[in-house]
Amino acid sequence: MDTVRTALRKSIKWNIEQITTANGYLTNVQKVYDPPKSIDAMPYFPCVNLHWGREDRNNETLMGNNELLDIRFECQMDFFFSESFDLPLAQDRSIADVQKRFGNNWYITDENGIRRAFNSVYLAAEVWGIEGQKPTGGVSIYLETFYRIKLTDPYSMTH
Image (cartoon, rainbow, N blue to C red; front, side, top):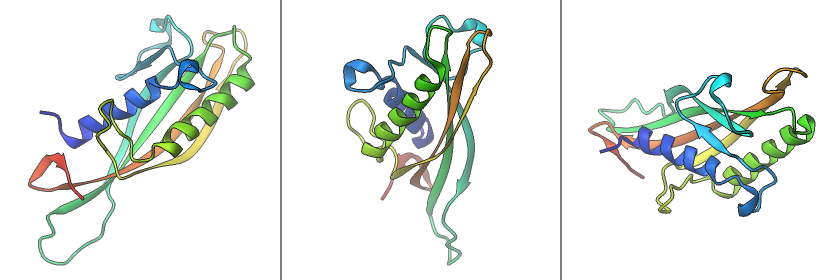
């Protein structure tokens, strides 16, 4: 049985895999890696490495033994592009596609339509690249999600 955190990670990965031209986006993601792969192990572009950041308690309820835990969970998506891409255009399009995907689906559903988070918030993007290297460049996009569990049951999201 997956924990809520594991189910959320899988859902974020699945949502990024849906960023394809066939689904109406400008970026055609070829592969999403979780855990991340080294650049040399990436045969398809564009591809995405997922990095899971800090997870903190979001609520400050100090009354009694509150069994609810509101959690803020950070995700970093590193998009990689090969030299065959117009790098600035590919970077801008991937940022817009992530904003569109998680802006329209901010509850972060999985492939079965089950909600895995209460909210997702686009935080920032940072473009990078060096001409002549493999890959040529990419963009790191930061997303923050929120979910709630009972301390006695980390396997079920609660409302």
